[in-house]
Length: 284
Image (tube, rainbow, N blue to C red):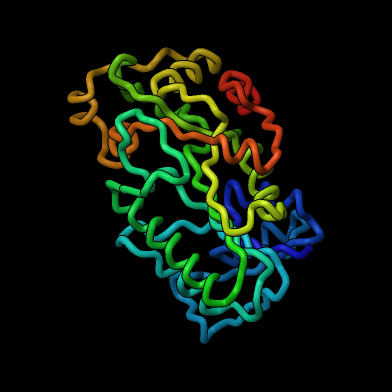
């Protein structure tokens, strides 16, 4: 099987290196493409903000496409995905899209499944819903299998909140912090490969996560303890809203318990880091 990966950043590189020899990756800059080629990957630069379908045609017939590019930070639609779809030449075997659990919005700590209607409360969440619909419409029009992964917070080596802890950024008091959801990057790579290849995953949506629902407060506190840093100061929700930047606050303002039963039952991935402490230790 041949794979085309669009967006070869933190998660994409881990997937690509596992599929080395079978994969062509597209990244936003020539400098990154050169770096990836130096690591043995076949890589091309493609800036989805500037290059139009007329500038480039990309042959994807019978390949599996994995799309990991986020929507632009502004707006509530995803023109990047539309440009990519318009430039594809041939019919891929499957199109895998990495979305976010943010499409569910704030559930007040309640459980959400893949059948829960999306109710995004942020601009980035609404852009993801637009991207999901755009992809499904395109795939159904062209007779292409699709798979959507709704991914929570990703952590791993180089992706722990160490600087925030060193700055002394506050966290919510535990009794005001709702359940959280996250996945170690290496486990996410395994889920992506399984979802891209499993016959059961055709035209399915999967919630992704490690099955643990520790709050963001518990997560930050565990990272601090294992890294030998002072524990973060705990404040009320009202004080956190005043002190934190809007972007950081938006992640704390929403709370939900992401049900990953379908992922566990259908994709057959044995996660390495089901326990949060083990994942943090490996990341350090």
